[in-house]
Image 1 (cartoon, protein in one colour):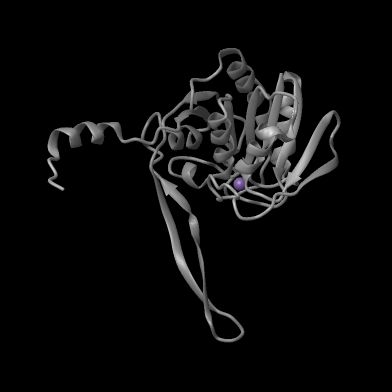
Image 2 (cartoon, rainbow, N blue to C red):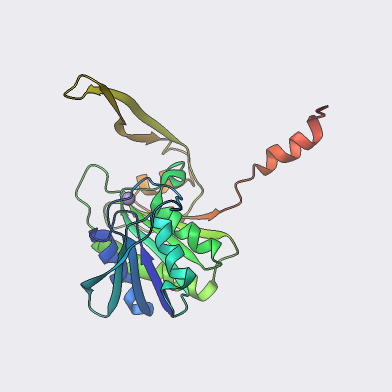
Length: 253
Ligand code: MN
């Protein structure tokens, strides 16, 4: 088995190293990760700039590693489009510093790495650690990440589907199969002035809240100390609305 490991926190992130270690018992590991932190870059494809791919010496014994000056999902794409010659069997991403829950998935470069893997018809898993507010300790995530990846290798995943896995900050009580919950973002637009008096802006604020009381959601599982495993599909169609619009709408255009 040949496993591609990437992330959105960048080649120097401790979580990337932990995930590479977690995959080593399962087969050959190749790491291709962004050269710099690309968190919250979503499923971005670099079209207007050249991509430079630089070998990284001494990343981890037995592991070939590269840094790319592109987006997280570019890393999957360059590997699949021929930069890595040996066929890849599984794409994994993370372990992200911070959770990727509910609507976070649309911002997440960590998840985008896995979605790109699904687009290339490979099973793929995104891993994140809900360390919010404290130090990130990835050690307790390694054995469960190995177990989840081994199960996916045995079973495969349906087309255009990934698993989104979130670890609680402490060693987990167990694991739960979940669905996406609903986040509530608390960002504010912060205006500052540069030395010339010209205003500039930040988007940011308190960490997002969310409805952690709704049972069987990703937010609920992690909040209660469980590993959350959510199957995610790339079909974003609102199927219920589609059915009802077919009944209700009679537009004359
Ligand atoms: Mn990140």
